[in-house]
Image 1: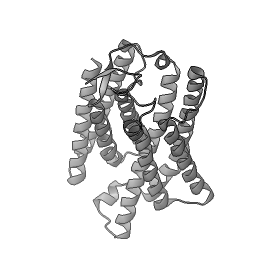
Image 2: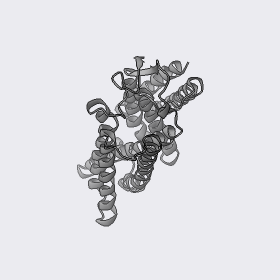
Image 3: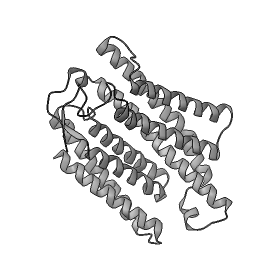
Length: 283
């Protein structure tokens, strides 16, 4: 049943993406509410999928790459829906729902089911704490990057004096810069808690807090990069386009650390058919 709801969620996110695209390319204002409610229904189905998997699988669904990607997409859409109440502009949804769709479609190509019982370390209550905090930080960085992309587009429209429909659809430069200013410390806070909780989990399980596993190393690099970005913003007053570009570059690093490191560099954070920690089968 969890896969049934998962596939419904993908279909609704894709429908929302198409509706947002039609809304952007045409003057059909009626497509925006359709896209929004498809997003809401998709998020509801996605929530049911995660809850069903958690209840009937008897483990918190974050132990596989499939689960991590699904949960990351769920967080991004959830944060977008929360933000939607503060900023009724539908423009964020036109990027967030395709991003969530891509993450879930990619996740659906990976393994989802565990043939063998989970190894004891993954039954720890540290698993949902550590992964949820880290992914929440990543989700906030995703929305900041989306805001950064919009800032660059909006600034370009203003400089070229193309004050038309897209200019009106996009939030103001002040609003987008405010999202960057408020979101960076918040995302950094959750990323920090995610790293600390992971170290405490490792300490309780293996007796050492840090092993310089590729994921740990790149997570630390990501932490230093965002610390530098926040420092430049606060101490040197970097804002506007420069802050927007750094937000986008930072999220590229987040995606590499989250997906690329596991796929290319391995380590004990890598899930999949070659991991000694998991034996899985495809969706």
